[in-house]
Every structure is written in C-alpha cells, then in structure tokens.
View 1 (cartoon, rainbow, N blue to C red):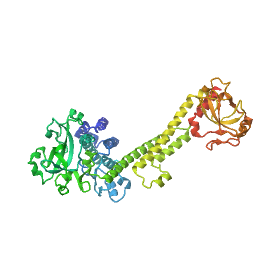
View 2: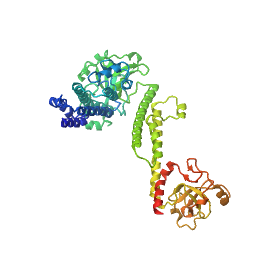
View 3: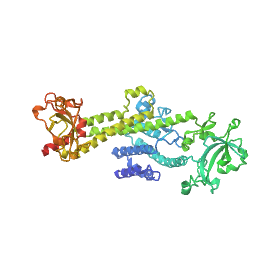
View 4: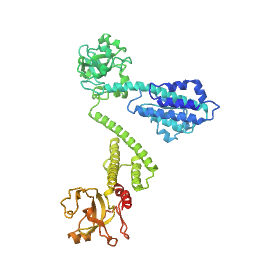
Length: 562
C-alpha cells in the first residue's frame, strides 16, 4: 500500500498540467483503490496524507490560474453535500454557526442543511470553496466509505480542472490577440450598418486577417469552436499592413433577409463576417433598436448614453481595451476599481510575506542584536495585519481604498527594507575596516595637540573630505588615508581652547588618545538615545548604531590585538 500511495502522490504532483492523466488513470484502477481502502488496513494516515496532497494540488491550481479570468461561462454553480462534507458541520453552517467557514463562501451562496451551492466566478471562488470544505472536514473520517468518496470526488475535480486549463489557455490566447488595437476603429457592442446591403447589427468581435486569406477561413472562435486556421506565420504578422480587419457582427433578426442567406454558411444563422471598410457606425437613433437571440449571450444590456451594448464579464475579458460603451465617468470608475483590485492583491502579498518573515525572525536566535531584531519583528507584525495607518493618514484620507492601502504598505515595507539594507551595508564596511580602527563608540578621548576631551560617536575608515591642508595634520603622514573620528567635545574645553562652544569635532586617529580615567567627567550634549551612566560616566551607543558600526566586532578585535 505504501508503494501505491507514493505512486499516487507522484502522479498528483504532476497532475495540474493538462497533458498528464496518469494520476486519474491510476485512481480508476479498481484493484488499486481496493488495496488503498482495504477494510483490513489500519493505516488511515496514508489516506489522510493522500487527501492533503490532493487539497494542496487543488489550491495550487487556483493560485496558478489567477483571479482575472471569469469562469462563469465554463463552470456552473457547484453543489456539495455529504459525504464530501461533514454532515454535522454542514448543519451547523446552515444554522448560522461556523462564521469562520461562512466567510470563505460568496454572499449569494445557497446554504441548506443537506447541501451547499456556490456560484463560481473566479478561480479564487474554487479555492475558497476548497478551504471551506477542508475546514468542515477538519476531523478525518473513520468511515472508509466516506473517505473513499471524498478522495474520489477530489480526483474527479482535479481531472476536470486539468481539462478546464486547456479551455482557459485558449481564452488567454484570444485575449492577448486583442490587446493591440492599433488600426482598430470600432469596438464590441457598437451598432453598425452595412454600407451597401444596409443590414444592421452589433459588433461581437474583430480579428486581423491576412488579405490573401479567404474571409471565411478566418472565422473567429467566438462563433465556432472549429477555429484552427491561424498559424505561426499569421501570429507573427498580425500588425502587418497587409492584414485586414474583419468584424464579426450579430445581425438584427429583422434585417437578416437582406443578406440573402449568405452568412448562414458560418455555422450559425445570424452572424456576419465583414470587412471594416464595408461597415459604418449607426447614427440614426430611430434605427438603434437591434434584436437578436444571441445578443443576450454576450451582452448584459443596452446603454442609451453611449448607444452601445454592454458586454458581459466573460466577453469583456476577451476584449479588454474595447470601451466604447463607457462614458468618461464610467471609464474612470472602471479604472479606479481595477486599481483597487490590484492594490488589494499587493496588500495581501505584502502581508503574507511579512507574516512569514516575522516567523523566521521569531524562530531565530538573535541574542547579539536582540533589540534590533525585536524592533523589526514588531514592525513586521503590524505590517502583517495591515496596521500601517498613522493618525494623519486617517484624518486626511477618510475613504481608504485598495490603491491607497497598497501605497501605504509599500511605503512601510520599502522604508524597512532601506533601513535594513543601509544597516547591513554600514556594518559590512565597518567589519572590513576594523583592522585600522583603534577607538570604539563611546570611548572618551582627548586631542594630543589641542587638549580638548570628547566622546567618540562615529568614525570613518578614511576622511570624508580632503584634510591634507588642515591645521594640526602637518606632522601626520598621508592624513587622507588615516581613520577619522566624529567627537562630541566637552564644552568647557572648547571655551578654553577655541573661545566658544563647538557642537562636534572631526579628528584624525593619530592626534587622539584615550583620556585618563580621572579626567572622564565631561560636559557634553549627547543625543538622548545614548545611554549614559551618571556614576561611572560610561557612554553606551544605541543598539542600532552599535550594529551598524560593528561595535561588538571592533571591541572584540581590539581586545585581541592590543
């Protein structure tokens, strides 16, 4: 049985590709199923692992398919009932309990005590239904018959989704052809009239056809599933000037007689395939009443403002840039809706990544820089739950939409990334320069020539500016290659040496030495983030500065080499 289980799992792992059918074929082998679900078998863990493998692969199909392709024309509402779902869980769900499971289901789902019917609009609806079923079946069934039925349904579902993948790939290819509207003057849904024959109709679709090709050979897949005339040469020359634009038009049922039956050869009475040069937009309002039995299959309604038929979701997906039926406000609303959808996807992706990164940090052993890690961990935890709005954001943006949330999440995440990148870069530079660094952050030093004392708050492996002409460096050989230190000086020493206060000094290592212990009591204006021991007068830098300057490495290295 273990060997059979491994074979099934290997087949399932490949079964999301439509060319692979070994998984279902193996399952259809009755002897294999009988051995897997033998009543004498006590190892139900094997069946549970198989069920979980199927569940993961079904979810993987949903994720790989994406959420844009409308599935309504291809997938009918799905009805699920026991034993596929746990009967007791289903009853609790229908009684208004199991709110966590109900959230996975669309609002227009039909939930009864003995079945659930869920409309499928997107691949995400399939994924959410699978999650709901998995939650209702959280306790593995001990009944072999029920477990067998559940796995059998999952196998059939996986096979159906594989077959659906082929149809969706064709849909995607059709959509990609219609992303380029260069040279296209008319859009789907517009009403047109033939210039010579004078029949009227609604534009259903358009294609680029090679001029040397007979018009009937390019009949679009929208009107027949037998469309197989295109080849690689045609695809590569779609924008060629020798191409001709052909429109598929749904004829008005009252004008069909004007075609003398010529267009019935395309397989469905009521369609016409016509060159762009033979058509003109219908301007006469009195002629805008178009009737046709196929219009309701591809269009939702007639928009009187734009004088166009509004395509349904599936048909609009095939022609994403045909927006003749939209006025300015509707187009702006459509674009805002799309931006918000993309924004919500970005927000969810950032939150998932932040949650994973937070778990990595929480499970790690970062004893040396625990403060820094805790800080990043806390910020990641807020990002993972979407807590990115400041009081100013809430006051200035009363309507928080998906696009704005995506911007705030990206800004938060980008700031964290830049901070971490800068921290890592500064630490790497510091570690590479530790051979030449004598003093650590917080050391109290005094200048050999000018006598002032101060606290080291930063250092550079080489001076940031040209110091070759500076006073006090005439006796230092090649000062531009020596380490320099940022020092917060004692204000009393500055008054005595320079006649006034100085906020900081920039001094060469050659001119500095550690201050004698009995002279380490200073009057300095330190940043409040520094920790100062008032009794011992020790100055400890903030954790982030210690990490970026590799203070721990510098101190350890200095203790070994001096």
